[in-house]
Image (spheres, rainbow, N blue to C red):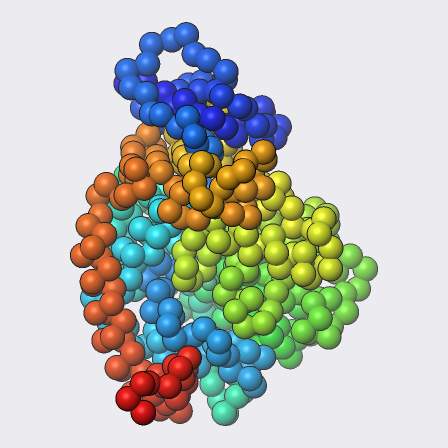
Length: 484
Ligand SMILES: [Zn+2]
């Protein structure tokens, strides 16, 4: 059945770049886009009215942990562990993870994916659901939510352990252990390739650069080449990891992955801000530095600014990475799983990092959230509206209190639009959000479930926290209670 969308603004793709089409139509049949243009003379069975809307390719979120958020909400804001350079990794986040039961993780995962869809985000590179929920449940969740997702097993032949109050080191578990995990990950790839009409895209997820040895990284590279699937790894994620890598190998995280051959056009580095030359590291680059290695190998860096800006930190900078030739995509990592918010903050922190209004432009971050994300996962049929592309589409109302007056809808999208302006979201030709509501999720029940899960999780924190601190000790309320 051919479905048409009449839009006030349409971001069409001309084969090279996005273009702004005013008063046009997008027509899709099944899960493929048939036509983008001023008008359409063919037969259309159903029209979607977007006469006040901006019609976009669905946004691509290249790094998030659906089951690991939103339990950080109302807890990890305004705090960070000072000896860990403001990061909550290894301490408060560890306590949160240990306090969250599998039942609660399922509730959180559903919530996170619902949040993504509500922000016009149609594809996610989701990391952690397989471990949190188990293979079958993770796959079922992706099916049920209707979203397009990369998914896979977490991998490592080592783990980061706390050896003294604030000393973290890698404990090696042995290559054999890592390879066993890699075989299980490969089975997952083979079993679920093409699942949910191709919406499920299996991937390999080495956990972190410091917990995968050189030999294991080489094994992952070889396996990824055989399987032809995307790979994602945490690297350049926190100061401690950068320092662990220097101490273990005398190489930066990026240099080390260059040496092992793991860098490549199928690799997405989750966060990637801690590179040579970043002011927080006081470690100057040599020559073109890490950026040149990333660019040379075609590696993607997923810029996930919100979680870091909350700790007073930022990538230096979105535009500088792009100028060096790096493919920079955007991810939400944790709460809020809101790509509109993430694009906005990506733009702002780039300007702040460069002291420059011309940095982190709306054009740059929109390209990152669409074309760069598609490139990262090897899908030239996503992140664009063009004949033959997949019908993953979002419609944003531009005649709302947030978005008028509108001359340049991409500037308004990045700077002003809110999730409440997202009217329609289509994944694989299926309408999942209509009139701003999720069609297949009971939102009221979800809200109740998440509140109850939060309260269960917070109550367990003292038991799981390294220093047995309560939620109130770790994260005092903003205001004292009325009762005194
Ligand atoms: Zn992450």
